[in-house]
Length: 325
Image (cartoon, rainbow, N blue to C red; front, top):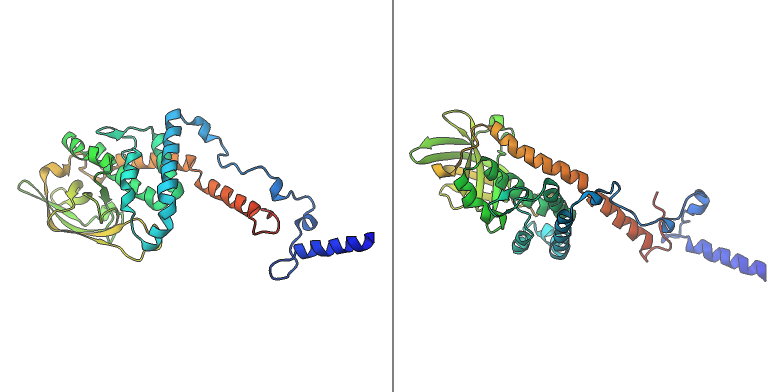
C-alpha cells in the first residue's frame, strides 16, 4: 500500500513538472542541486549603491512628487499615445505644476533646483516614459537654458517665467537635413537688415517644434560667417513646421521639419550671448552635467528587472516560481 501511494505521488509530481506542450520540464533541483529556488531570494534591490541616502530632503520630495504624477497621469495613457504617435497635451498643466521646467535656473520663476534635484526629476519622468522626458529636456535643458545663459536680461524676463510654468513651450533647432548636428556645416543663414535679421534655411528632427510657441534657431551670420542664435515666434511670417511621420522610436515626441523662408527676426530677439557656436558650449556642458547625474541616479533598468523578477517568481500562471539565473 505504501509503495503504491509513493508511486502515485511520483506520477503526480512528474505530471506537474510537464510543460504546456507535454514535454518534460527542467527540474532545477536535479540539474543544479546547489541552486537556490527564486522564491527564497529576498526582494530585488535597485539602489545598489545606496544613492538615495545621499539625497537631501528637498531632492527626495521632488522625486516622490514627480513619481506620483507620472505613475498616476502618464503611465495609464502611455501605450495609447505611443500607438497614435501623438502627444498628450492635456497633461502639460500637470507637468507644469511639478515645477521641474527650468531645472537649475535661478530666478525668473524657475525652480532653481540643485543639479542632482533637476536630474532626479528628469530621471523619474524617463522612468515612466522616455518621450515625456525628451519633451522636458528639449524645452528646459536646451531651450530655456540657452535663454538663461545666452539671452539678454530683457529676454530672460520676457520668456523664462512663462516657459517655467509650461504656459508656453520652446524647442531648440540646430540639426539640418544635410548635415545633422554638424554646426561647422550649418547652412541656415541670418542676414542683417534694418531693425533685425532675415533667416533662410531648413531644420530637421526638431523635438517640440510642431507646437512650440518659441523656437531657438541657430543660423550662420552672412557677414561674420559665425553661428548666431535667434528667438523665433511660432506665428512668424515665412515659418513653416511639418510633423515627421512614421517614426519607430520616441513616437510621442513631436519631431518636425522647419522651413524658414525670409523670416524676419527683430533685433531684440537675437541672443546676444551667441556670437559663435563655441558660445553654446556652456549650454551643452550644463546639459551633459544633468545627463551624467541622471545616469548615476537613474534606477529605471534595475527597477524594471526587479518588477520582472517579481512577476516571474509570483505570477499564478506558472506551476512554480521560475529560477532566474
